[in-house]
Image 1 (cartoon, one colour):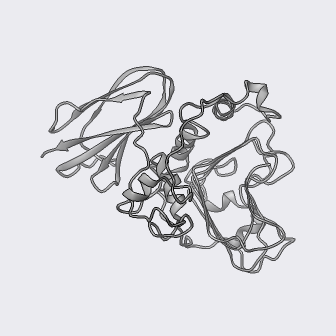
Image 2 (tube, one colour):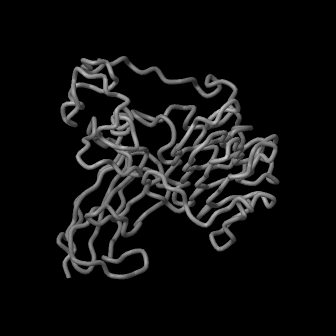
Image 3 (cartoon, helix red, strand yellow):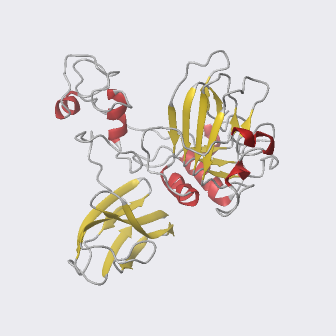
Length: 355
């Protein structure tokens, strides 16, 4: 059925961020929003919506609803009704204060960035478009085509490995094939995982004692729903987000990850020469096929340049960085990070550029 925010019976759902999700093979709710407050819908991939619904159906029911629709990739499939727009408003409901902000989306109606932004909105609903984005928690926003690759690389249950159902879902998007799944058994079913030993949790609030200690929380106090670590998220949400470090979420200063994920599928070698000027070699290896991203960041975490963003077979690779940013300007002297991401795993190293 897809993704639904709120309900048709009330409007007490407020301020939700939905980013970097894959919505595929859903006849309805891609997504459906019936809520108050702000929905920050950023860098999601929508594929093969059905013939009986809107591709990005937005149904608002109160007078204070706001939508950020930014950097999403809307891709039709064999079962999609291509006449439907990425964003539609249900005009049968209260619509007097609906507001929609759109930026940087790609869809079957907006196939390139030089086309008008409003092309993703149904022509009869463009009067709801506003000029300024609504306030929402900070999320690193990618271009829609970049988000498409990143979402497919990380979608589904990928730790310790992506199961057969999720492999099918992702591959069908890449290959533009149909595939409404009626039962997971059609594709081998869900894998069996050996049970593990749960971590000690004295107050049974869903956060292990060790993690609470490291982040200054009280062990004998049920504080899962407090917001001591981040004003935008409950403590237990901060913990869950820390289980697998998320490159898209700006983490509160001082919050430590619950685990340190050691990449097993990839190796990133120290660049050579280092320090360097004017260029350096970066080598890496992957032991299974997948989408690969190699990116350069400055010490403040700002992306400087993408060196690789493509599907690769297992093997050894190297690229050359010439010390320039995305527009060809030579960067300043200093420490830079180069980060490799593939198959849900990520690793990085530091290097020094000298002029």
